[in-house]
Amino acid sequence: MNTRIALTLALMIPATLAFADDRSSAQTALLAASCANCHGTDGKLAGAIPAIASRPATALESQLLDFKHDEQTRATVMPRIAKGYSDEELKALAQYFSNIDAASKQR
Ligand code: HEC
Image 1 (cartoon, rainbow, N blue to C red):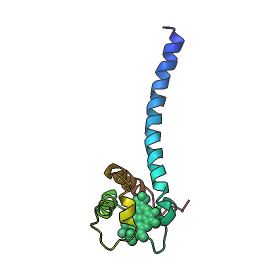
Image 2 (tube, rainbow, N blue to C red):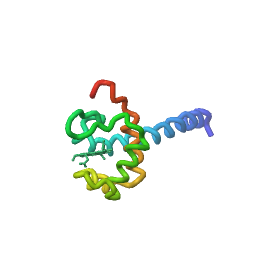
Image 3 (cartoon, rainbow, N blue to C red):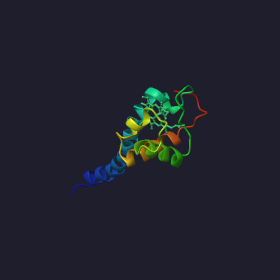
Image 4 (cartoon, rainbow, N blue to C red):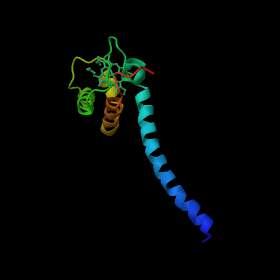
């Protein structure tokens, strides 16, 4: 094999791996975009609907699973919404909103 082709291929491998990571966080950002309608951009709405940014991921995840499995009886819309996601997606969403710094300016 020509050295130049071998070098090009070697340089492409890390780029491909980095792309795989970007894509999964981009996919979570895409899932999270539908939450922004009610919870505000980045989950920081200060109004009747609770802000969800920067809460502990485990707490958010357990709330979302409670909604999904109808264990939060006072909720209105979240049980319907949570049912549309797999447990893994809810975990990823909990992580996503947990990682947002609530104190930083709303985008
Ligand atoms: C149609 C509006 C709407 C959308 C869209 C929505 N939510 Fe909610 N969310 C609410 C409301 C209203 C509540 C309060 C509980 C209830 O009445 O269901 C809530 C509560 C929550 C809570 C509990 C917060 C607390 O302090 O009790 C979490 C966590 C949450 N939502 C996460 C999400 C996530 C993640 C998404 C996107 C997958 C999302 N929500 C999309 C309206 C919405």
